[in-house]
Amino acid sequence: MPGRTRDRLQFAALPFRIGANGKPQVMWITSRETRWWVIPKGWPMRGKRPWEAAAREGYQEAGLIGRFVGRRSIGIYHYEKRLPTEQFLCEVHVFLFRVKQQLEEFPEKGQRDTDWFDLNTAGLGGRGLAGRDNA
Image (cartoon, rainbow, N blue to C red; front, side):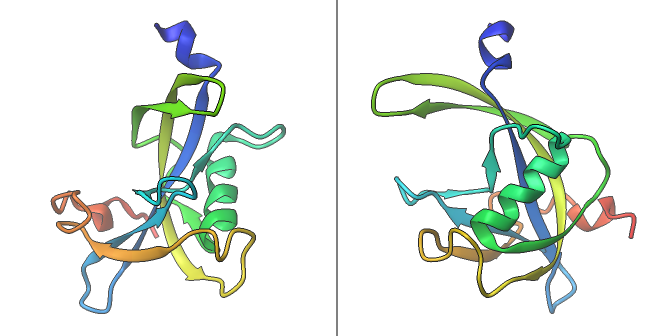
C-alpha cells in the first residue's frame, strides 16, 4: 500500500491563532464540492518544499498569511479522493501554520466559507497548539 499513496501525496496547513480570550483557535474551510469542513490542502508544487506548498494552499483557499511552526509534519491522514472518472487514496502530511492575518481578497474567495473554532468545537480536544509555537 505505501507505493499506492506515494504518488497521491498532498500537503495541508492546519491554521491556528490565539483568540481574544488567549486560547488557541483553528480555522476550517469548506470544500468546494461537498461543502464539508476541511483544512487547506493540495498537491506538491515543483520548486516548493512541502510546508511552502501547504502555505500556498492556505493563501489560495482562505487568504491566510502567516508562518509554519517547524518544518516537520505534525501528522498524516488518508482520505479517498473522488473524481468524476476515478477514485484513489491520498496521503496528506499536515503542517502547523500560525496565522497572522486573513486577507479580504484571495483566489478562491466566494467558492469557500471559512471560520475559526475553539479546539473542542473543532474536534481537537485542546491538545495545546499554542505550546508548539516557538515565536
